[in-house]
Image 1 (cartoon, helix red, strand yellow):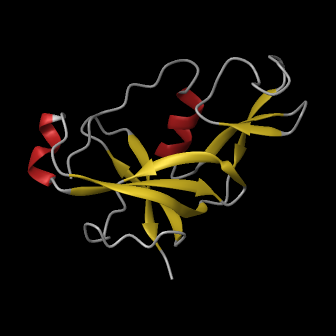
Image 2 (tube, rainbow, N blue to C red):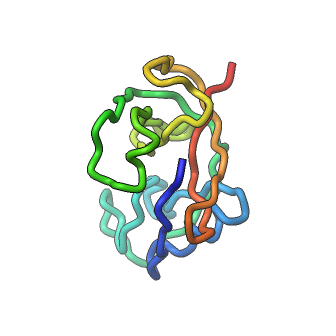
Length: 136
């Protein structure tokens, strides 16, 4: 599946640099110990702006839900339709949600609440993005 390139901005650059090193990091507030994704300039829980860090994650999670895309608007993905889009919750925090095409999982055979692990796949511009694969 061809993936559109990602252009990191100043705020998200540490996330994307970690992805290029095959590591998953999530922004964390050291003041109230709260994870948040996508990254923001201040903590949504306590409002701190000076205590934000990038915390390594285990790279494990569960499938919360999914949908099958049959007729999406992105032309570069038309030849890959239909395909899965799953909502993944992280092992560390079920409030953090990420999305994945679930490489290797047949269309509409997604195990809800199934365990997944992160993998990193390069986009058209070489930037790696986190995707998730089902594990036993």
